[in-house]
Length: 430
Picture 1 (cartoon, rainbow, N blue to C red):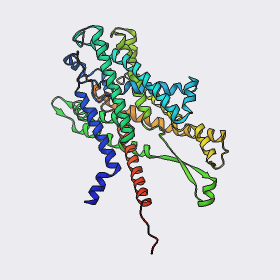
Picture 2 (cartoon, rainbow, N blue to C red):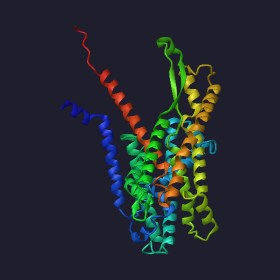
Picture 3 (cartoon, rainbow, N blue to C red):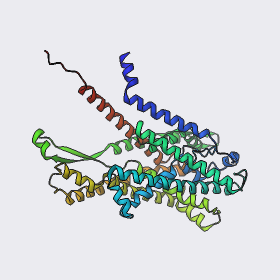
Picture 4 (cartoon, rainbow, N blue to C red):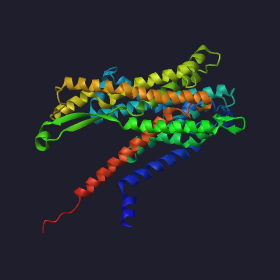
């Protein structure tokens, strides 16, 4: 009984329960539909590439056009913009990024304000686009007030998703936004498997050999992702005082894929922006801009897949620097009287870390790109409806988030064991 009691009361169990509870609430909000729309007209656009990509970040919120349809897309886009502007583009943002927790709060406020603007614009564009694609049958009443109500409802849902994600980050397991995206993908897995079966069905017979090949390929892909994600390069670090006391050195573990699945999430988000803009301006299928976007910013064409892969490489290099911050790392080492063997403190240490990140980003970015686009090309060859369901992007996000959650659980267990050891009562009477 004591073991059961300890298990129920443990911080890990509480965090797991809290995460599950938030995800259940998030999923329940999918049944809160937006008033003033015709869901039957929306059902006819189930294979639309733009909506399919957006659904990846909302967990299928476009099936009944709920308040959660927008998901966290606007927030992720705002994050990309703000973090890019920190790279010496806007001096104020750059200064805030160096002010620790205080500066981070200011940047978070800017990100949320930008999310509001982007959310309203994106929601309006999606609403107008869907209404155009359904020949005006999507909105029950075609007037500005209806558009405003729909846009505000979708943006409010996006902020609810942000809030729930923050709650998971603070009190649950993993990065909240990534966990929400992962949960959305997992919820759609049954329909994905059904799409796979349809893709390998010829006439009335299912080609189970082809299906088995795809499943085995997916399993091998997952194993490769796990191995690659857990691989790291250890850079020795010596602390002057600690070395004198213990004679042992420490290490800086740099992962081959430093930013994890962030490049994949951001690249996927960027792919949806041009199509949303087209929806906003009601660009028709005969428009030259429409043809350009459908050629270069969709995952169902070879050129679109190539651009998607190049964006993954770009974000891998960018966010490796953003996450590690070589200049801050060099300053912290110097303050702690630590150094990397054979590397001078200060600028030489900064340059060394920068070179290491560039060295690791090449194999890391190539791996992310290949894992994302090869299954995508295979899926497109089987069936166009599988462009998201079989993509390596989904597998990368799911695997990466689960690995991160496992790592956090391991850290909590270790912390709990140390806490138990330190809280033990010792008697010196004997």
